[in-house]
Length: 235
Length: 262
Image (cartoon, rainbow over all chains, first blue to last red; front, side):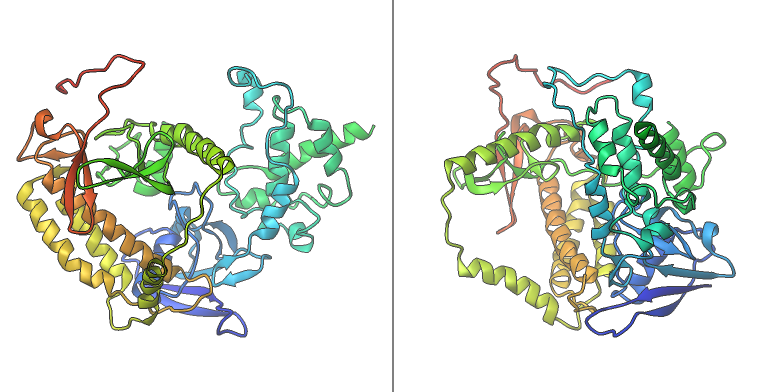
């Protein structure tokens, strides 16, 4: 019997958030956390509110804080997280809560938008694709796969303290994705925009981001590359 | 392959290196949909079988039927719907807007009808719960309109859906708040799923042949004489009519329908 504790907050009726307890019989199955949430919503309390879509770990909608660690509910099996039959589900830390487990992602998206996450190349478009050697293309591996689930940025203390000035691990991973893309010609302008005390340099190598990324990506490493590019530029 | 191995290990708890991967057929894509022309303009068919563009209504992607897939969409070709017709309809809308659109007054009755649907959900009580009804809808469709179909079994399914309709229409919500209410969204989606399910069911039962993904045990062959056409579903009256397939491409040779054999 699983003891499930879910963060509840409805701004229409609650003056403050509170945890609600549920008992859930897993019948011995190693379910995903999302399966448990769905069963509770269907069988016990239809007002439990959370985002979800693909149920296979590719859309990033169901990023949550599960037993203290950020992750995607749909690909977190109970066996990986539950100790002593206890499951605690909370919203991603640091972002404003709209309802129960749903947070306002605006700050996260604003930082992503700031790094101009699109290819910039003003040379005339060729008749076919802009070609890239397999070696050049491999520079994007470990960067393009980000699904913008926000697990990393919301696990980062620097992002908690400065979500409007520090770009955060997800934004910086994408910033490097474009810096590393051989088809992009705005490298110097991109680096200029990142060259201030807050955008990149609030990263202190805490590495919570690496620990929680559900796609196995490494934002700290990407940030390290940006640091190198910025420092090389300055000298 | 690495993607498949990971899916198998994560969700089926089966290591494909050691054991066979368990599979079950499930509904994955909607072939057919809102009829459109190549500009993404939605089309309706009148009683004489003539096409009429519905001014101002566009559709593209999986929801639309231009059609490019016929009775069986090839793997990867859903991208075609998005990339080609997403672009085509976007460009067409842009030029239509530049030409100037004629704004029409909305009918209060239409607005009231939409409002009624929402009001019923907010005011109903004593109805069944969304999750239960959704489960019943799922199992009716999976059992009666799955991969292998048969007339008598489909007729049973249609009767079950008819009975389910009233219960879906009177579904009630426990959560009536307005703060990011996903329970209400799931109820609205259930009602939408029901409409799609009933359309699928009625048309499947009417089509007395096998063609592409529509495989019937009681009509195992294709009937090109009577059924080489699109079926059109009219929800008022639950009627099925036929609409011709385009047999006159202007720039390429027609590929003649063949018997599918291996």
